[in-house]
Length: 628
Image (cartoon, rainbow, N blue to C red; front, top):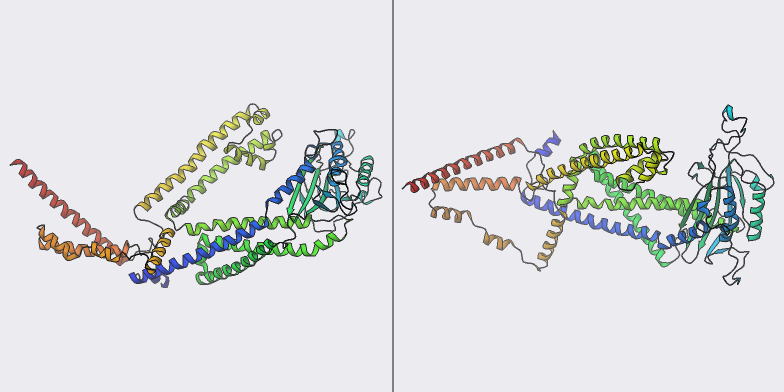
């Protein structure tokens, strides 16, 4: 009952409504201004983390180690490795030449070679590179009985359960013995498996000749065997000119099917954060970000305490909570990454003769960058909360909220057909076409087909009958039928919403009108603009003037009084139900208000009937005059 009385109590006076609107305008503008300051600060903070040098550093390093060809075979580089022979050619050729820069271009020695190699003369090789492989045991899979006479060995795909931990080969140095992981490096997700740390590991020497001799010995003693499933080549660089670390990982996977699949990772990160004056400016932005985070958290906490469960009924409040969660997550990642950098960086740089594992630090910095990217994305999305006060944006939100049920029903039908075609494409073309090699690839391939990016020749070559049938029917049903149905749902709903707004429905208040009114009020207070109230009074006629004008026109006194009574009643109802001061067009109507509206409609009907009689009387007089 208390809730009902709150909704059905008499409305506030005009003065109170005007005061409430001014307070709401002031509060909304303050909130918008505060949020824009926060957004600008967040943009400066995020753009300060990334700079174009990261891209160029990755580009030159990938060009050096991925695109450089073998001396005797220009077609063979790391990207094109397909056999063990090609792999050893790369190790003894482009990798060796890329890691060891012994002298300047004119053979002049510029620095002490015992210190470290300087790739491209600018990038210091931190420590020494590391090479490690992971293997699987023999008999981890079962050979069919009919083929056991031909093949008695079977090496399954890599899993932690199938991993080989025993010694092999010469059984002398670390490259022939399994070494467990001594760091917290994360798992590596490759093309055909997920690989953990550890394995058969060896590090390269500071000397180029010693390293080459090491490669030759490993090749001659068959370090790579049938059980080999992956080889990692890890090393790290530091460029003092741009204060960036480049962590490089080259991966060669040996699937159970044979051959080699190569992949790579180049991470350019800024581990030393506060070096220049600009870095200290970014630090001040980080402190400002934390202050904003505390203020916004306090505000949302007060709102939850005030509105309780009603707070969670608004989608914008959920977005606010998501944004706060991402901000706290970003701060947590930032603290963790900088703490790990502080603890590990000094230890990694102490011994230049050992491998410096910066991959762990780079991995978490990349995750931190990803969290920040998602945070600023939702921070920009929140701008729609303020733009929604605009009429156009309000129509858009109303359209989406009205058609959500139709869209959900359509989505069910769409994805049934879409996944049916995806499974068909995967089963028919999966063994022949790369785009359909897995069910996930088939799903994304179909999205690309909808956007016009498709390989029809590959589909047709895989199956000359089902290929064209699949492609034509998919284009017809998904592109021409279903997508046009989706557009029709949106278009029809938007037409309905636009029609509703044309007959009086509008947003609670428009942001542009708010800013304009505040601007005009400020000009009036500064005496830069004359108030328009006096001019409006001069142009407005009084009720007495209207009555005198009606008497001069020959109307009866009873008609004048009745019209005056009707005008006052109409003005009172218009002020109550159609005034621009009202902030909510959808307030519930009480029984008393409904009775007044009903009587108002009855009086309008009487007036229309009276006007109709007057028109009929005039027409009869006009007809009589024509007959005479």
